[in-house]
Amino acid sequence: GRGAHLIEAHIEVDGLKAYYGQTQALHGVSFALEHGGITTLLGANGAGKTTTLRLLLGLTRPDGGSISLLGLPVPQQAREARLKVGVVPQVDSLDPDFTVTENLLVYGRYFGLKDHEIRARIPALLEFAELEGKADAGIESLSGGMKRRLTLARALVNDPDVIFLDEPTTGLDPQARHMMWQRLRRLLSEGKTILLTTHFMEEAERLCDRLLIMDKGRAVTTGAPRDLIAEHIEPHVVEIYGDHEVRARTAEYAALCERQELAGETLFCYAKDPQPLLDVLKPQCALRYLHRPANLEDLFLKLTGRELRE
Image 1 (cartoon, rainbow, N blue to C red):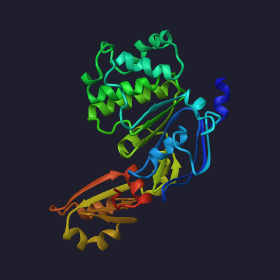
Image 2: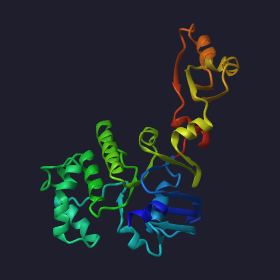
Image 3: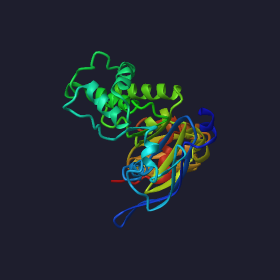
Image 4: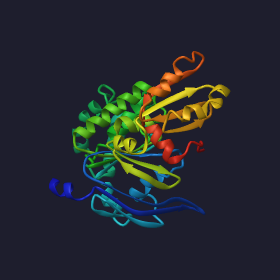
């Protein structure tokens, strides 16, 4: 029953290792997800996010470590575990030859659902995806945002307890992205457990209750975003934009803040009290600067470094 779920972690991963040929993709990743809430795997491309999801679903065999999904060992009982999981892959895998309704029907059959059961659920799924009136539309006639919402609705056809989303809003315009976020919040309010991967800071900042930062196949840190920011980063950030002028005065600015980093043309000054630094900057009319609270990007860059990953 439902009660048992609350005691048992929905997902437990311990010491997960994975290789692709000679390359080690995961170096002993461990984490546990309780019932409910959104956990975000945040990392640059190649950090190991998608690999982690594939291992959890039993699509790839781990080279070390153990996985328990909804109390079942993976990959040994991955098939049974997947019956209670919804998956939104990175690339929409909708069938272009089928209508919206047919896509939902075919997908539902994978879970052993009868057509009449699936048909009974379709109106609610279309309402959720804001695709009422599109039941008989061809997939090619849908916008990118509509396809993404349909893929999310399709992942709900088996009424899953846990939903995995791999970069759910990549390639969407801002309106479509906001709409997707709204939908995820609605799933949360219905008590679903959500695990999503993203490389968008704003997405992680807005959505997640719990953050797992991944870097080069390792889990760097895990916790609530606000707690992690407070633990690792000074509360105020002053970004100073400039060129030689800024470089010449870094020592002067350094005396007025706890920590600073130069990245390209921008000097990041991290301060407990930004006022002394702001007082020095104000009279310099040629200088552009921004004072803001510390955010997830500061945390990510501090823990994973500023150099670009390809």
